[in-house]
Length: 266
Image (cartoon, rainbow, N blue to C red; front, side):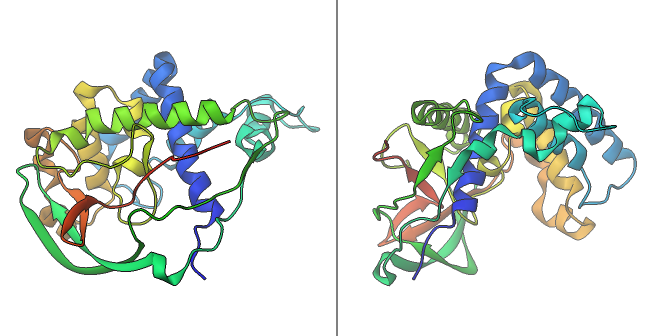
């Protein structure tokens, strides 16, 4: 039977919690932003391996925001190495199980639609298996308070903060973007939801530099042909990156792909 893996849901929560952390701790955000800018500038001088680009920075972003000295160093282990160890990841205490089983009647097949900033739609020859709008997904979450500082109320607040940042920095740049139903607890889950909902970048980089640097980050992960095809070098002029909003249609209604919201917790 179809279900949502707990690992995917927890990965979404990690992105949201880390984004909130950097939005509220701007000194540390600027430290990370400086390192990102350095690597972006380096990528413009010489090509970077796509599988390694910003890999170290991504790891340090995670450590700085979520790792605490929960355990002492072992013999011959430096404090910094100990801190990076996964045993000191506070989100080990956030336990997310797989969702309850869904019905096959809850599923649908939808077409991928790219929308640009002018509201023009481009249906693609790509179909995705997806969960129908309106389906309730129940996911069990337990918190070991000895390790993890977050409460369910904290997580809900982080989702709201992430959603506000998502709208401000990205979705509101699309005049005809379909509104997400529900409330301020909107989040995005699953494949095809786009760069902004799956990364912490827009929580770290300030508004004035985010578009320029994110366009270069995406370009650095593409081959030459894809760079020309996707045209992210023009995103600065458009004022938003990525310059495409990932959408689909269900019963003739245009919707953002992967949009969910919290309807009950606790």
